[in-house]
Length: 622
Ligand SMILES: Nc1nc2c(ncn2[C@@H]2O[C@H](COP(=O)(O)OP(=O)(O)OP(=O)(O)O)[C@@H](O)[C@H]2O)c(=O)[nH]1
Image 1 (cartoon, rainbow, N blue to C red):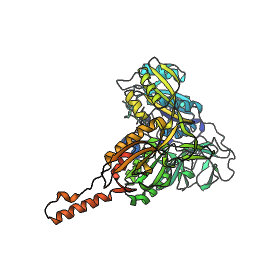
Image 2: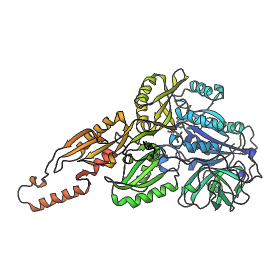
Image 3: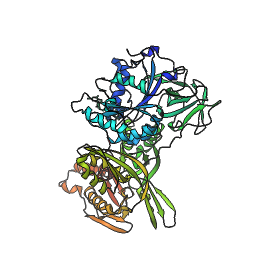
Image 4: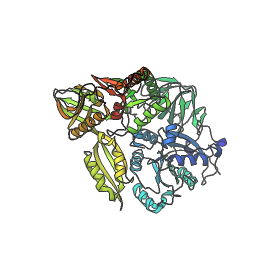
């Protein structure tokens, strides 16, 4: 009989021996959120009639795409069948599964003692299963291996139980089998969490120390900070201090999520809950930071936090230049909730005023762009995303380049680009095509391991620039959707990189500049020049379009001159018709941008620059 919230102990007085903190980690789509839903139902914290799918995914985009972006924590009361007289407190943290958000996964893991490693029984182990498992092992978590979706006709529980058992070092019989969809086996899983995950240990009488594993901005309450108390106790109304910055705040509210916010007197050792201090910006409540009391606080912070580092940059410009202030306001608002989002104003001769925005990866870019368009009603042009380059000149001066048009001229000694260690998991029949793809993307093979007879793990070092764009799409199409990919940044390497400029009638168009490998420069130049020729209408004079590296032209097309006489069609003397045509021509002109002396239709910029174009698809990772 599941416990109801009525006999649940107050969070400041719960005996840590009855607390279990765990998370669920899995490859994307293996069913974490669905499993979390079943746990909410089974423990009675959400009533049947209030239940909706993916209860914890609150952002519209999360629901629509079926992905989890922000972590969530819920307090679940559970009286295990082996000890029905004692209601235990299970604090469950649902984590994001996507590589862009790995840092959030790792902080969530640090807040737990155990983890449910969830694997789809029809798919088997995937790249992010491994990546997350390694993270869990680094954090010394107890791992409970679970196969999900055993209700599916395509499920192969025997086969994958063995694979999973080999991986975590247990017997295939120890691998639990559940269906998050029907709820089968979920109660046994909760019992097992109580039995196997160690209770938190912390010093009750020590100064308070709580780790921040998430913070979100709420327009009504300000920043809501999620913490796990390690030592001592945090109490309502006391003043707290953020240990990394020394900033102090009054604790206006403290409590737990069950799954709605429920205020409490305080949070004790081992508890997981939220804090509200009235701050308005998540950067004042950083993931990974330690919270302590202002009076008699702790002196040693818990394990450090990391400032998220943007990996991919793109220029965002309003289609209608007068929307620029709104774009700035919208970015300011989104940043309140997203410490990883960085931006600074930028101007482009072709696109006008906009922002250079840094993202954790392409999914992050995509989500932000979609939120700007949807929640703020903005129409945007996003320039093709690029990674960050470091250019060292012969005089040893250095430039960090986040925008290709800033690539320095002059005597360059070395150009460095970021590289990642990529892990691909796939059926063995695709080894050839995967290696071919990685090779054409300038990859270096690091090693290969067989997980079972028919599945292989291939590891490569690859330039980030080669992987962030359409690599994942290509990988999926070459492996009929069977391959999975994970990657982590591992530093930088020198490469033969050059900047390709595009010149219209002799004028450089900043927005079209790109940094590419020297071997790919020619193809890029030819493709762009040909495309522009198609998109730019004839002008009153001949317009050469050139692609150049420095002063060396590598591709050229010409738009022939034409005098466009719109009135030619209007023989006869119908003056009103003539006027109408002239009006129409004026309208058309408004949507033109002057680049030097050439009129370029807005559409040409969108078509060429848009990240949906061949230069790189921002939609590659869903
Ligand atoms: N048949 C069946 N389908 C399931 C089961 N569990 C989850 N699914 C389906 O699998 C899909 C992915 O489930 P989610 O719970 O969204 O997966 P997730 O791991 O949370 O995904 P991310 O949040 O994107 O990481 C959904 O369409 C679910 O309905 C199951 O036990 N059986």
